[in-house]
Amino acid sequence: MKIGIDLDGVVFDTEKEFRVYSELFDMLSLKQNSKKNNKELRFQDRFKWSDEQTQSFLDKYHRRIDEEANYVPGAKDVLHLLKKDGHQLVVITARGGWNKEMIDITKRRFYNDDMDIFDKCYWACENKGEVCLKEKIDVMIDDSYEKCKMISEEKIKTIYLKDAPSYEIQDNEYVKTLYNWGEIYRYISELSNKKKS
Image (cartoon, rainbow, N blue to C red; front, side, top):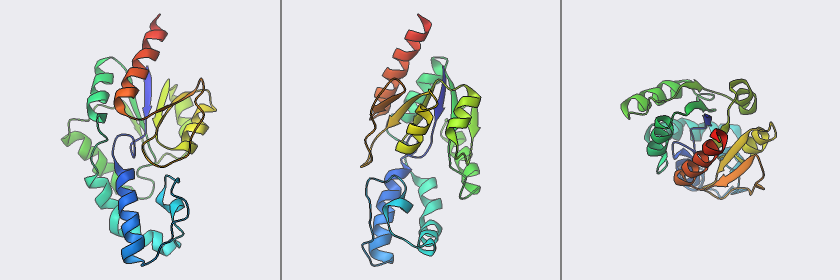
């Protein structure tokens, strides 16, 4: 099968780091409490910050978070298992859209961490549904409620990897909410076995 994989919040635990540092930035640097909606995935949507405040946060933390964020528990092992099982792995990520330098940083991390296992990478990608259709993706893994909704509406099976306060999504034929990489491996193995029989 061909598996589409988001990076932030799926492979790298950047979303948790963004949550931590955006809270600290709001309280310590901006000296305010401007949180408006904790269920939003993007920090820009969780706080009432001006464009200048948002840019100041990014200047201070973005590179640090992308360089230092740990892998989501189990991501490395399961991705290697999926590759060994014969699946094609395609990165489909918005990473690199704000800062092109993050693409090279990520490629170096993959190389240094024995994670240079992806068949293809789409960087700075905003329309993931379009890429999934073009690549004939069988299953897309993402942590964004909005992206999962959009991709599943294209009749592409989508795993909504949920690990933080966020919106609920109704599971159906095309969307499955899962909470860790062990569950992802089980689900993809079951889909793959059904496809073979």
